[in-house]
Length: 491
Length: 74
Image 1 (cartoon, rainbow over the protein chains, first blue to last red):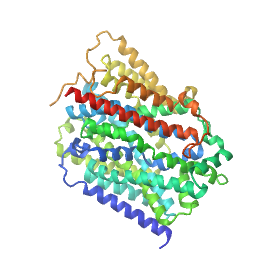
Image 2 (cartoon, chains in turn brown, purple):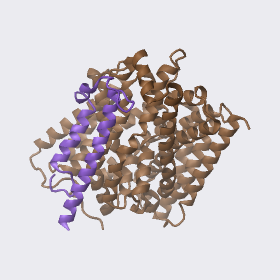
Image 3 (cartoon, rainbow over the protein chains, first blue to last red):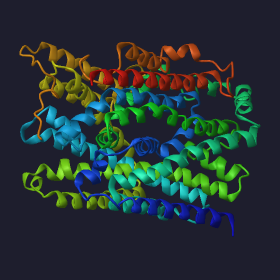
Image 4 (cartoon, chains in turn purple, green):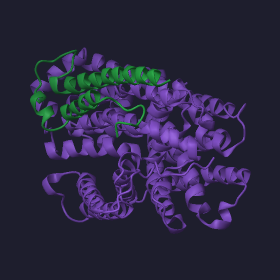
């Protein structure tokens, strides 16, 4: 058997295992919408830990992360810094969101915010829903395209891009359709554990094989290209851009709907806190992957890559003298990162599409629960298919759509924090802050240059917070309760 | 905001803020060098690994504090 056949066979075998685990998870669930969307609010420590870890670390961990280390050097640490710091925000707000979700039956992020800030006909919920879906579909497309690229490179073209991305997308859609969050839970447990083991094995093997160890590798970089190992690295990401990117990403991470909505699924607030407590250790997964990127600084010195994202694949598949089964494992690990995130994105965006967008119309809101559930399942298939087609066409505007839509979602953070913690929060102030913050972010993202090279979203957030706080303080008839305290219990 | 159940103490909030500041400007400025190389990592990279561990320890302490307060309530 040739090497590429062996790699292909191993990877297909891996996909079959993931599929079986995902489909099996549907047994023993009650067929309720809450069960499908939030695991019946009964997810335990182990499964929730791996859901969160595997959804946060996407194809970007195996492709973009090493690519940053290889092409920019030290600024790549921004990725590990913000992914670790994000846990502080989760720690502060997730237990409250989980509790309120249980009390009021919330299943989406838009439902939460529109209950705190009531608008005529609930139009805020619709707007949040539409923008969320617009941010999540490009994100899903990037995961599916990443899977296709991984397949093609690791099997030396035996599995072309279109087939590789179809396989990954099809497996994900099948188990999310069948098993909902339970399917995601068990497959993410498998995939999350694989990612950790494979990342460490690859990172240490690469350093050992080419340099005799991680320390020796960095010493060699120190003598040949020391500029990669300290700020500002290569390519001039200054301290301002680096620091604001870390802060806005750490703060904004919680606003990704697929992360926010997982808070509803926890068995208890204590379970959530245990998950978060262990989470920083999971983020160490990025260290060996960055090591591979740094290895590329020396190994690819004479033949620089035109696409830095391919640095891990180039080193593992072409340069390193690894047996075919190790490459097969490496591919499976990287696919795990892409697919575990893709599953959460498809699941969450289908839920939002049905609950916040389709059911905005009063006629659809009266839909019986079982109808809404099957609509959500078809939504998973429709969204996966759309993302697959987008991956094939690969429109250049995809990343802009992602940045633009997500840039707006992050601007919901001040009003979320206000709703949770601040009695003086004024609804008008929240909407003015949100609108101005979103406009500034979009303007700096696509129009003019941000001041001091700061992150556009950070600039928007600073102005947004300032407006929200100032206008809220000016209000005379301040309520004695914060928006969440004013919620009337439904049951 | 102190009357919300299950929030970290003021001391722990300060600790988390220090962890965040250490990873951005100006906190990270003092670590911006290659030597000494510790556990195989250049100092600037080791700095982040160490602060993530510090963050983990902080979360463990906060968890235990909050669990104890929760027990007092009941």
